[in-house]
Image (tube, rainbow, N blue to C red; front, side):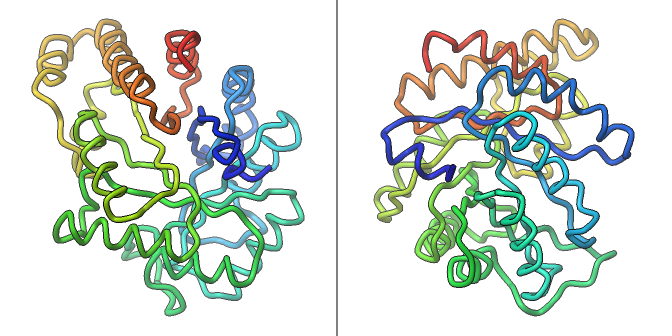
Length: 286
């Protein structure tokens, strides 16, 4: 099933993001996480992708196959392009097609000093165009409600997103944010710019104090004062911070749902307890 079909039916989605464990034994043990996630009946699960390596030993594809074949849930495979040639992208596409995987989240990928970049692709929109011209996938893309760290301003951010959509991106998943008003403002600007594809807000419950600085630096996400007060109060109490972080994320999600967003994309950090708690909280709203 192509993810875009969900929205053509007028439905909204619930989806999760997971990442392949780094160690082989952890990859084998991820079934415990998938058992819980798939029991919650998501519309799709996206699987993150690391730069470097061939498709023959890629844990992202291995995990996506498991989600598709064992759990009968649609996987969305992240695919970066900055460190790959067209030939390598074609090989990834062939392997995905052979596995019955129909959905790709097309990304540029992060600049890395330890892996040389190739010359075939510069932006995610280049990858989208190439995949659309040469393969048959539903293409998802990423968007940044608070601007990509490398964007000069919000106008450029919207312009780059429009280029991705015009290149063939059918659904966009947002980077995490903690202030819904920023997402609504971004969504309105997208609609004014005639970006008419589904825009799915991405939510990450912050349940550990160590997450905060890392998330802010990596994602260019601002941290509301009201949540900072929660962290300041409970940062030395793991159980209380977990509960408070979950409550904050749940309040974000409920507000987004009653505001008729196209869906919710939950960054689970491979923690099934997070997904279960969120789904229990929104069961009567979705």
